[in-house]
Amino acid sequence: MMYSKEEIFKAVSTVIDPEVGFNLVELGLIYDGECDSEGNVKVTMTLSTKACPLHQLIIQWVEEAVLRELPNATNAEALVVWEPEWNITMASNEVKDKLEGKM
Amino acid sequence: MVSITREFAPPFKLIAPYFIIGTLFYVLSNFLLFGIDIVQISSSQDLYIISWVHLFLLGFVMMIIFGAMAQLIPVVLEKGHFSIDFYYIVYPLFSLGIGMMAYGFIHSHLILSFGGGIVLIAMFIFSLETFLTLKNVEKFDVVTISVMISNIFLIIGVIVGFVMALTFAGFLGTDVTALLKAHVYMIIGGYVLITIMSFSYVLIPMFGLSHGFSKKPLHVAVGMQSFAVIVVFFSALFDSEFFSKTGYFFSFLSVLIYFYLIYTIDKTRARKQNDMYIISLLIGFIFFVLSMIFGGLYIMVGDETYALLCGWLLFVGFFGFLISGHLYKIVPFLVWYERFSPLVGKEKVPMLGDMVPTKSANFQIYFTTIGIILYSFALFYQNSDLQMAAASFLSIGALFLFFNLMFMIRFK
Image (cartoon, rainbow over all chains, first blue to last red; front, side, top):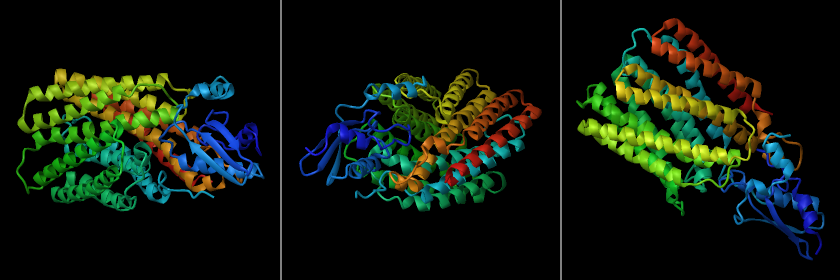
C-alpha cells in the first residue's frame, strides 16, 4: 500500500466546505480511504444532505486534493455513500462546539 | 480532471435578473405604500390595494420564487432541469405582464386583461418546464409530489385570475367576487404555501444541519392543505359557506402541523448560530403566527380590518422575510459557485458567509420589522401619520435589501 488511511485523510482535510467553513474530515464526512500498490486512491465519503447543491464539486475537490497532496497517487476516486447517514455526532468536538456557538 | 456539471447550479446570469427585478418590484411596492388611502380603506377589494397586492406578490414574491426555482428544483428533486433555457423567456414576459396588470387595475381594465394574458403565458412556460423536469424523476416522494400539486394549483389559480381580468375588461360576465376566493386560495394556499412547506423540509435542515426528524408532518400538512384548497375552490364556485369554513379549518390545521415540522427541524439543528437566514426566518414565522390569529378573528367576527391585517402580515411579514432570508443564502452560493469555485485549491477563497453584508443586512431587518409593525397599527387605527412613518421605515428597509443584493452579486 502506497499511502495510509491517515495520509489520505490528511490530504482530503485540505477541502473546506464553503458553507460551514470546516474541512470535510473534521465534519466527519470522510468514512474511509485506501490506496493500492499502483497508487489508485479510493475515498469513501458522504455528504451532509442528499440535496447538497455542491455534490459534484465536492467530489471533484476531494479527487483533486488527493492527486495534489499525494504526489505518487496515480488515480483518485471519491465514492459517495448514504449509509451510514451522516449526523452531527460524526463531526469532531471542535466542530460541534463551534456550530453550537460555544467557541 | 472531473468536469463540473452545471446540473445543480444554473448560470448566475440567468438567475440574477429574477432577483434584481424582483427586488426592484419590492422597493417600488414599498414606496407605493405611501399612496394607499389608509383613512378611507374599508375593503381588501379596493382597486389600488389589488394593484399593490399583485405588484408585491407577482413582482416580488413570485419573481424571486421563480428565479430561486431555477436553482432549487434540481436540489429538491435531485434531478437536473429538463431545459434551463425556458427560464430565459419567463422573466421578461412576467415583468411586462406584471407592470401592465398593476397599471391596468387602476387605469385600464383592457390593459389589465392583456397583462393577465402575458402573465398566464409566463406561468405556463414556467410550469411546463417544471412538469417536464418532473417527468425525469424516478423516485416520487412527498417533496416531488408537492412540487407537482403546487404547480397544478398555480395554473388553475392563474387561469381563474385571467378569467377575472377578462371580466373586468368586459369580455366575460362571470361573478368576480365568487372567483376571487378561488383565485386567492389556489395561488396563496395552493402554490405559495405548499411550495414553502415542501422546500422548508429540504432547505432549512440543509442550512441548519438538522437530522433525525420525521417526514410525516410534511405528508399530513401538504395533504391537508391540498384538501383545503380544493374544498375552498369548490365552495367559491358553488357559493357554500359550510365548505368554505371547512376548507379554512383544514388549512389552519395544516399550518399548525407545518409549525410542528419546523419545530422538530429546529430542535434537531446542529448549527445553532443565528445568521441572517435564521433571524429572517424567525421573524417571518412570528408574523405568520400573527397573520393566522387575525385570519381566525376575521372568520369569527367578519371585520374586514382583520382580513387586511391577516393579508398584510402574511404577505409582507412572512413571505417577505422568508424570501429576503433565502436571498442571503442563495445569492452568495450562486455567485461563489460562478466566481470562486474554479479557484478552490489554487488560492484562498471566501466562505459563503463572508459574502453577506452583515451590518447592512441587520439594518434591513430592523427597518423592515419596525415598518411592518407600524403599518399594522396604521391599518388597525386607520392612521395616516403612522402610515407615513411605517412606509418610510419599509422603504428604507427595501433599499437596504436592494443594496445588499447588489453587494453580494458584485462580491469579488
